[in-house]
Image 1 (cartoon, helix red, strand yellow):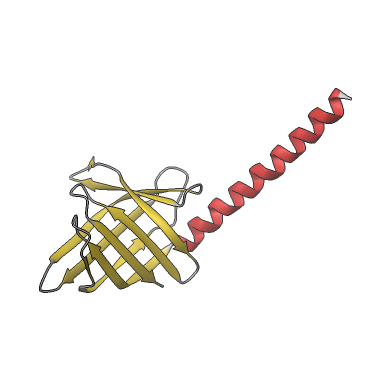
Image 2: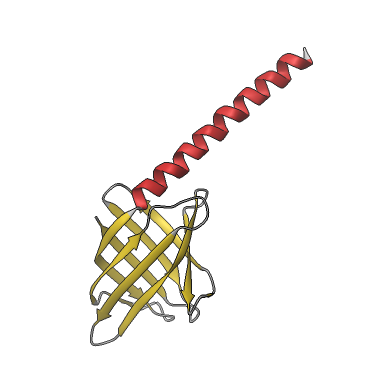
Length: 144
């Protein structure tokens, strides 16, 4: 009786484990390539929201077992705010919670990891947001 329960439990764990790996690999495949910025929203500490003119791209290299690389170049401008986000580094995905972690690398040194809340990832659409050190929210929408 105990052997049947143990075998059933192991079988279920294997099936769930393989499906999780498949989902992760599918997300990695979807990310790979060049994404064009189509929308940018900025929300300051006081809760005021701005939709500046923005352009740029984000590139994810095909991920191998050790390093997943990315590069980003974005510019935005409006009468209220102007800025850029230019960086390159490594990234990782966390399926649960939809997190996309980006770690910029400057002069060969890893910088602080940036946690991005990824709300959408399809073959043609990517949407994520992060809150910077000053409490401002940055919302990005990309398409392939």
